Image: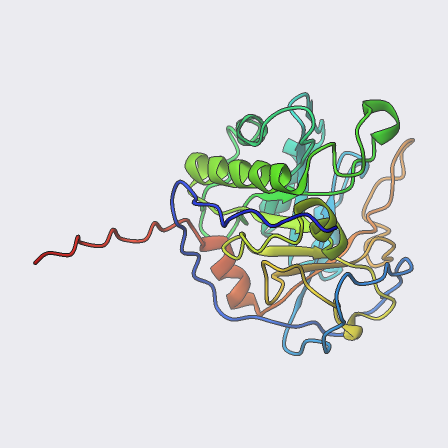
Length: 295
């Protein structure tokens, strides 16, 4: 029996994130990708409209040449900062700073380990890693909102849990909520959520509690004009789509030193350059309190 959906959460504050309406993808050169997992819901028609190419990097990518990244067409990037509460990427500060220096808008992301500690604690650890780098706050159009990376537990053989980190859907939904609310409180920004439709369905019970958090969808396809397939229940459209983890566009941007892995994750932002600037300027706006009824 599927898990019973818990009552809709009441967030500590209600966010309004105003962005221009965006949807879409366009065919890009070198769309090589890994085989696609089956969508979790019925496929939707391929979206239409303008889109912008980006990538994400981590400590596995050594000596990223951000000038070359930009020359090859990247218009944004996400950089791994932290994982759990004990790991900060040794390359985060340089990657994050150098991307901005050459004019590539970038954001930072945190890899969630929900079995280890609460969402509040991991959010605080994540934001602390941004100290001296603008704190993830709005900085003109250089800084994209923070991102929470939600994936199946890759450590299941050693941590004694399961693919959903040992949490029930209700517990996972509450964990994500606490992480998001803490990031809002510390940065003034609503974090994006990175997930697959399948992870979201299995690990949150397909929660529809998060429409205010922009969706960074992962689903790999051979041809991005196919579209991303079905979306998780919280969203009617994606903001960013990671459409391959085996892309070749940016394979020459790292230095090839021992342990280096080519930058193979390629992403599409669903919108125009103006829409991307709007995302970079987006911030949490609490709704005004309603005056009590009288008489």
